[in-house]
View (cartoon, rainbow, N blue to C red):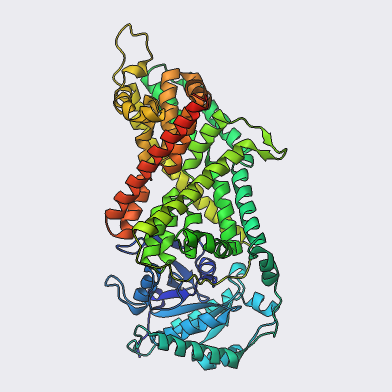
Length: 626
């Protein structure tokens, strides 16, 4: 018998997806948590410290959700390897905290039975017990504990119900001496083993759980509409349309306030700084450059808000179910919908989310087309050009023309992703069939306001950090290139015409001239490879230096005066397919384990961007929009 120091204890939080595991982790650890990656992979490692009822601090690890320890995806591999202690850099957990959805115990019980073979101390937490009781589900906790041979407690993580009792039970278990750890008996289960485990799980549930004969739940009634083959798809399209309209309509007041703030800041800098390079750097490089990107923060947060609410509500899985037939026709697996929808916010988490796809072929295809989704970094580009060239007038009395154009650009990204997937499956994966789509639909749950606000805050801080680092450094570079060398004495042309930026832009311009791009656009595209929204900041800096203070304050008006409509449309077409930022390409390399798919993704998107811009520009010229 050996006593274990509670402060040295490592508890692994494990459970099936949609069991409320992460909500429980947040309730137990609060702000005492940190996020990193497991060594050598991009799988997120979330750890924190919980304080037990007696005040002891215990380390808690939130493992990726899994249905089994078989490891059919990178996420499940990590969960298995942590529980079995296969990481050389850390010992196996001392204790397993298994979380199960009390409204859907069948799958969770099979995981519990599998985890028992690992021979680690374990406590089962029945989460969402309040919903189960409202549905008439009666769980005999003592009987369930006796059948499983482990302690069982209940909780309602989103409302912290049962948390105090859970902390006391952890205290009781952690404070006791423990027997020497028995070696794990777990081996990779065959299909027959999984069937046997499921039969045992069903026997345990029959012995300890009673359910109403005909459950009539709010979730079931709502799903009769939202999962209907016609009305469900109409609802999904309407929801997406409202989301894109909101990106313009709801964000306008906040964007106006931010714009006024940066205008006032620019005017203030002009009064306190002497004319010359310092004033040019602060006003044209920093304020016009970085400010022209930060102004789009409200639109980005609105997009994130919709995605977070849909995730917390439980609608994401329904959307994947509805889209399976359409995506299957293009060779994409139904599970690809969630990573692709996440890519609307940012391609990086979308690509990382492909780890939930078991089949390697489907995972690679999804990674390859995820960058075609219109990420939040494109919003500044789209908004700037649409506001400058598309009149803000109603269509059919209620719809905004600018919102319709934005919706069309998003739709172009979606259809191009389906087209690329179709081609890839015809030529890259001809000998492989898409496996059947199976997905567990979670119950609908009201989003937790605190969790949504916390996630929005984290994303806002990440965007502002990006603006303060990557975008700022690019603006310093662009300002330097656009300001030096200085014009010769007596020169009458704008100073920027003698700069390094003009030299570089005019060197690239012949390649881009067939698609209607001038040298200023050529210069802006280069730093746009670091981050797409940098292109807007680069245009702001270049035109501010070229046109003076009025251009610094009104970049959109400057573009409307210098670009033709054909060039503006070609620029939008380019950015529908524009090659990904450097960060996304780095994530593709890590997820695929090499440069092959990075190069394929970069060059096929570059080719599509050029072709789309060329066709758009030539058609626009033919229509007299040049």
